[in-house]
Image 1 (cartoon, rainbow, N blue to C red):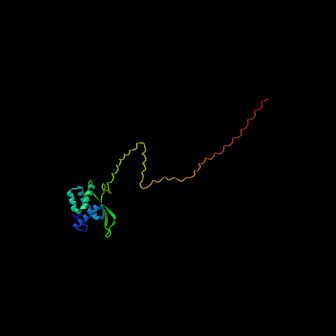
Image 2: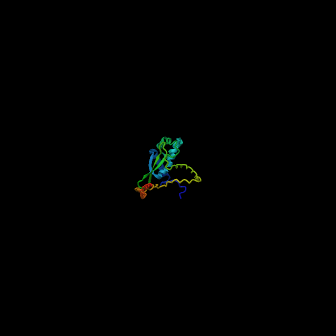
Image 3: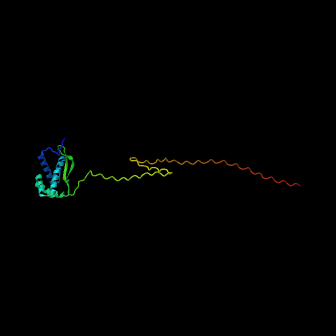
Length: 204
């Protein structure tokens, strides 16, 4: 178990690692962006950011501490003249590590960009806070139907994932004529009326 063994050795002893951090820091201060392995970039970040914090103070004591770490007066001058005022209002986080898809030739080690942030630039947080869910309105209590009235039909609910099928329409057919009632048989003609008999002649 690696208890109390924080940090990466990078295959070097203590003095060699310190020289490596010093060289990478001078190159980063001079160019603003360097390409190195992911492990080296992650290890040199605290070393660089502590020096930038000293440059923000701008005192003679902090300048002497930076010279003792870097041992390069030109790099220390640029550190105090440019980087210190640039990050004066920023409370830490002066560098950024961006992984590259291209690997190192030879051992195919993972490489990354180590760069300084620009003035006024803010880091983009990919994993931001989740938006607050909208408040859910309380459901109104169901009213019981009045006595003597039938309950209202339930509203149709939409099913997720399936579309409501349109009502099936029967095929169009020709209208059939309505059945006609049978005609009644003709009534029999009335018999002709017989003329009345002539009156009898009077008796003599």
